[in-house]
Image (tube, rainbow, N blue to C red; front, side, top):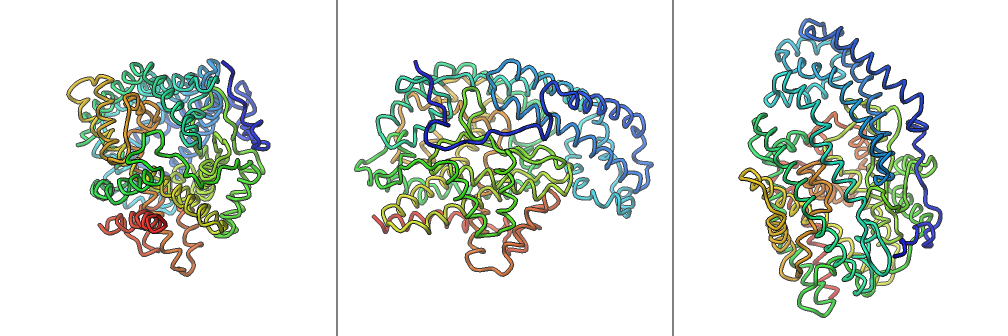
Length: 597
C-alpha cells in the first residue's frame, strides 16, 4: 500500500518543524554530556553537604539550599526535556528510544542522590519551619514548601522511597514507553494507504460518510488485533498503582491525583457528579438533535464528530491558521499575542504529521531557563486550528509562569488547562463573529458544542472508565473483553441513546495515552472547561481590568491554589453552583441550536 501523502503537500503551506538546539544541538552534544556529568558531581556534593542537617539550618541557609536544589533541577529538567522531545518526534526510531531510555536512567540515578532533600524537609516540625520562614530567602519558596509538605501523610521511609524512585525506570516508565512505541508503530489500512493513528482518527471528522465508516472499522480492527498487549499494559500499571497507593494509604485510586492537583476530593466529586447529572441535557440532547439533522433516529459512532452538511469544508493553510489564532489573542490582549508570536518566529512548534511521530498534540514547558515547545499533527481543518489555539494557550501560560522558577512555575493539572481552553474560546468567538452566513454559523456552533462535549462529558466518562477499571483490578486481572465491556457501558451512559456502537468500538479505549501516562488526568479538561466558561462569562460582562487580572492568574504559575486564583473574578470552585454555571454555557449553546432547527 502507498504511504499517506505528507502534510506539506496537502495545500497546508510550509509547516514548521521545531528546532531543539535551544536545549542541546544534538543527542551526542558535548554540552549535554557536560551538563549530566556536572549535575552528577553537584548532586553528590549537595547530598554530602546537606543530608541529615536540614533541621539545624537557619532560614537563610535552608533558602540557599533550596536555591541550589532548584538550579540542579533546572539542569536535569533541560536534559530530560530534550530527550523527551527528540523521542516524540519519531517514536519508531529505535535509536531515539534507546537515547531516551539512557537519559532517563542517567537522570534517575542523579536524582536519587537528591531524593533525601524533600523527605527530610517534610520531617521538620511545623513550628520550627514557621520560625525559619521568617527569612525572606526561605519565604520566597513558601508555596513550594506548602506543596511538598502536602504529601507528608503519604511519605514512606527513605529506603522505600529510594527503591520506588530507582525502580521506576524499569517499572511504570518502561510500560509507558512500550505503549508509546507500540501505538506509534501501528498502521491503519484505509483507502489504499497505510495511515498513522493521528491520520486515521482525523478521518472520523471527514465529510464523506464512507470514509468515516472505513476509518472507524480500520481503527477498531487494528486496535483489536493488538488489544492483548494494551490490556497487559493497562493491567500491569493499574496493579502497580494499587500497590503504591496501598503503601501510601491513599483511600481511592483518584486520591493521589487530587492531591497532586492540590484540589479537594469533594471539589472533584462535585465536578464529576454535576457533569454526570447533566448528561441528559447536554450530550443526550445534542446527539438526538444531530441525528435529526442527519435524518436518522440514531447516529453510528463514526458519525459522532461528522461535520454538518453546511459545515465549512475548506482546508485552512498554516499561515492563515497562524493569523486566525494570533488575531484572536491580540483582540483580547496584545501582550498575550506578542508572547504567542514568539512560538512562530523562533521554531518552537512542530506541526507536520509524520510516521512514528507522537500522535495528538501537547505543549512541553521544558524549563524556565529555556522555553516551551508545541507538538501538533496539523491537517488543516477547523479542529486543527482550535488545537493550535489550545496548545498555544498552554505555551503562553508556561512562558508567563516561567519567572516563578523551576520549582514553582508548573501549575496543577486542574489549572494548567485554563489558558488553553480560554485560547480556544477566544478563537472560536472570533471565527463565529466573522461568519455572516447563518447556516455556517450554525455549523460552527455545533462544532463548538461537540468540542465542549468532548472536553467535558467525554473526559468525565473517561474518569468513570478509569475508576471502574482500577476498582475491578483490585480484585484481579481484567480480560481485554471485560475492559471493552466497561468501555461500552460507560460510553452508552455518557453519549446517550442517539449514538449506536458496533463490536469493534469496544477496543477504542486502547488509544488514550492519559490512561497510561497520567491516571485520572482527564478530569482536568472538564475542570478547565467549566472554569473557563465561568471566567468567560465574567469577561463578557465587561469586568473592569479583566485582561490584566487574567494575565496575573497565568503569571502565578503554581504559587497559588484555585481559591486564591479565582477570588479576583468573584468565582469559587467549591461553590456547588460553580460547575452548574460552567455547564449552563454548553446547555445554552444547545438551546440556540434547537431554536435554529
